[in-house]
Every structure is written in C-alpha cells, then in structure tokens.
Amino acid sequence: MKRNTTFIFAGIMSAIIGNAFATGENTVTSKSYVDAQDALKQDVITTGMLELTDKSGTSYLPTLVSYDSTDGLLGNQIGILKDGNGGSIDSLVPSIREFVIPSAKVVKAVVDDTFSFAQTKIPKSGYGATGQASVYNDTAAANAANSWLYDRVKGSGLVTKTDADGIIGERKIFEVTDVDGYHAQNLTQIQKDIQDISIPTVGAMMTAISNGVNAATPTGTANTIANYGANGELDSGIATYTGAAAYNATNDSAKIPTMAGVATYAQAKMTCAGWPDGVEHTDANCWLWYKN
Image (cartoon, rainbow, N blue to C red; front, side):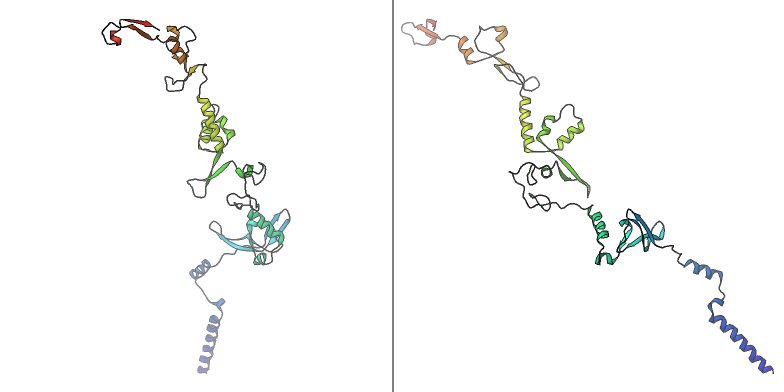
C-alpha cells in the first residue's frame, strides 16, 4: 500500500511540472524581464489610405511608412501613385506600372511639372532657338528671327560668372541709345557705376567718341586760335591780327599776327645808297641808307 501511494504522488507532480513547461502562458516571469521585453517592442504605427484632394476631386492612395528625424516613423504621409490616381505629385511615389503602362493624364502632369523647371537648350553660336534651322545673317530684317538685330537674338545683357558656385551674374550691353545719357547730371552714382561696367557695342563707342570730341571742342569767336587754359583745358582761343586796321598796342599786342598783318606792318627793307671810295662794300661801310 505504501509503494502504490509513492507512485501516485510522483505521477501527479510530473503532470503538473510538465504542463507548466509545455505552456508558455503559464510560465512565471519577473518584472524586469517583462520591462525589458516591452522596451524592444515596436510602437504601433497608425496608417491607412492617403487622402489627396485637387481640382479633379479626391483620391485615396495606399501609403508607405516613412521616417524623419523629427517625428520618427510616420504613416499617411507618402502615397503610391498608381494608374488613374491624381493629387499633388510632391507627395507621391510612382509605381512600376506608371513607367511600364503610363497613364497619359497623370504622366503628362508629372512631365509638364518637371520640365517647367528645366533650362531651355541653348543653341550653338550663330544659330537660332532650338528647332530653328536658319542661321543668323547680316541681311535679314530687324524683326526676323534669324536677324542679328532681332530683340530675342541680340539680347540686352551677357551672362557672367560670380564668385559663388552656381550663381550667375549679368552685364548690360551699352547701346547707342544709352550714350546721350552717359553720366548725365541727373543720374545717381549707382546709375553711373552701372554704365561704367556695361559692355558697349561698336556703335555706342563710336557715338561716344564723336560726342566726346564735339563736346570737348569749345565754341569760339571767328578768326581765333584755340589754346590751353590755366588748368590745362582747351580754351576758347586767341584772336589774330590781320592788319586790316591800324595797329593799336593796347588792343592788338596779345593777338597772333597773320601773314597779312606781318606784311602790312613789317619794317620796310633798307637799301645802301653808296660807299666811300676805296672801302669794302659792307653794311658797316655804308655811308647812307634809304627805305624802299
């Protein structure tokens, strides 16, 4: 009887222990173990369809879970662009189908929006805009697309480099029409400085030179000779003496005589009347001079 009781007790204990190990939910764990496991769990990310509304209506797109350094993992931020979906292209990721079997409406919108920021191709030197086969020439009318004088050909400025990468500058082309106002008194110093760095055309240079010569030559009185003034500037001139009127020391002493004036009032030539006998005929031995 004692032997049977021992076997029965052993069987009961074995069943209890085996059941405890076989079923994880019945295993006793510590609080530190539970806390450590909770720290490893991924927080639940709320996500769903992305709602986009534009002028064509409202679209619901499947979404991707994304990450940023501010908010961490996020849902409902980026949608997957599929055939027939619209919405703001800035918040969409295109599916492979969009490339393989593109939707004409959606792809056109994407392409148009993308190329609106693209730089137009610059044609090679001497040629018109992209797609225009004609070459610029010197005989085309001013309003012709292949004329050097066409506004969209000659332009009004040149693109230049600056001291920063990716940043371009511009220099104005100085035209003939700008010359009349060059450094005019009513211009500000900034406007004058802009003129000084402008690139002149040949016409502008020649006009400026011509106007500069005319402006530098003073208007004087007839029959005067131009001279330099006290400060080295070209002055109005010095009068001439022609001999047309009697010489007046007060009025005529500072004038420059012409040949006519010199001939009229020059000292008359003297001629020797004779020499004594037996002497050499020199001016020193002449005994009488008379005026011709």
